[in-house]
Image (tube, rainbow, N blue to C red; front, side, top):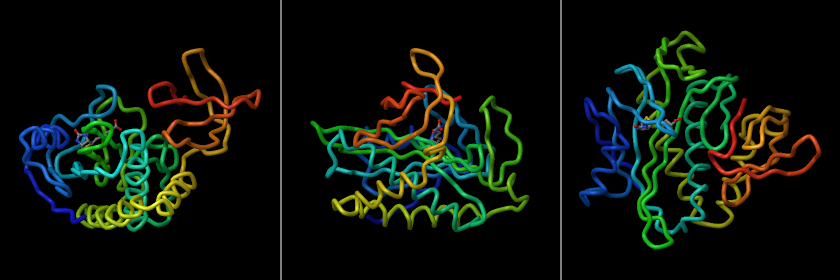
Length: 246
Ligand code: BTN
């Protein structure tokens, strides 16, 4: 897949622009919509995504993963999370970037990037997927009530070239996306995702519909559900939104 970058000075949300292109049948695989001023960025669960104009990367990539069943969609979260980590590592190798399930990117205990993936199905297959990514690069003050935002500049005090990080992401994504077209490649991506999982195998505090508990993340199943062993050693399985981290 060849990624083609389409730049917009201002957009409400790059994901919304991508949805519009798909609705109007003007979208094609590999189109990457990017803006320097996203003024109504969307996050998960009706959250907003804050990004000061000109400071960060906010973009959406349109792909057509027609070779994937809808039930296999989590592999895309793995590809995206790993590609962001690889891009950030090229700019700042001294820090460990990790994926907080399902695909927030964390450094130390703060969030440096967020991902919002939206799918369009055709029967049981994926037809289009929009991969929306916000990476905090040079912003040093955050005004929203997001709990723990961080940027590359907050970590090191240096200013980074956003385009270099975008190019790094594009290269990694193109390679990782090719890998998931074979079974051995999928296994490789899955193992790397597990190796780079935040708080894996460490005791952490969670909350589910029955209340608070302590547990250790043990892995992810094929549907992308999180497997946590609780204090009694029993494995609990959670889908996205069924679990809160504390
Ligand atoms: C989250 O962590 O809640 C997901 C945040 C996703 C933000 C990105 S920025 C580019 C793209 N366009 C949007 O409106 N949102 C995503």
